[in-house]
Image (cartoon, rainbow, N blue to C red):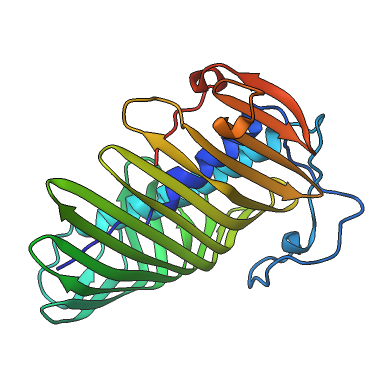
Length: 317
């Protein structure tokens, strides 16, 4: 049975957002005069954040981006810990099971040698989590996985999670809502003792409501590929959130490239845009304006670093 983590976006987006924020060149806060409405259509965006551009200037603060990063991290953490609590139940047969704190969950699946479709339905199911305490969830999650091809030296498979969940963090009384789908494609190959990989994560729409906080990822894809010697990462997404009062578009005009013997990326550009734009340029992509990292806002350099550790962010993918 193939199982993949749904939180491939968890480490990536918060890292990129705070990386841009650390340069001092991008930040939150709504714009009193939004640009043309071009944001994605979302189901639970009650305050129309997806239609409000956010000001990005040299003097913008980073507080909104940091809060947005924290909201994303919180949402994925809740999902991850709740999923781990289900796995700890060691369900081996299909059926309905009582949850530790009340309510129940029902698990059904269809499995072949190369595929799995599993549906979990929650009815006020209360499970304890290490960080957030007891969480009550209702709704459903559908997990699908298909092995596309397999040989002695290569394998490829596709999988997805589709969530329609609502609930409560019982310790705080905060309401929760998770809705959307994450689709994953994974490829592994071994040739001459060298292992290469390519991981692709797609999100058309995924929304989280965490009490009064709202965050969404839309029209998104990230790609991670490489070998033991080098790798590259690229991303595109629209990020919407109450923390910034609107939306920002995230992309890598040049993929971020890594070498196994270097701590900092050797090249690549991460770009945030809304009402204005900010770029984080690595290595050779900084065009001589920095040895390791340069932050540009609306075409001008605002910060330069000789070492990526100077910006206080650990780069991991």
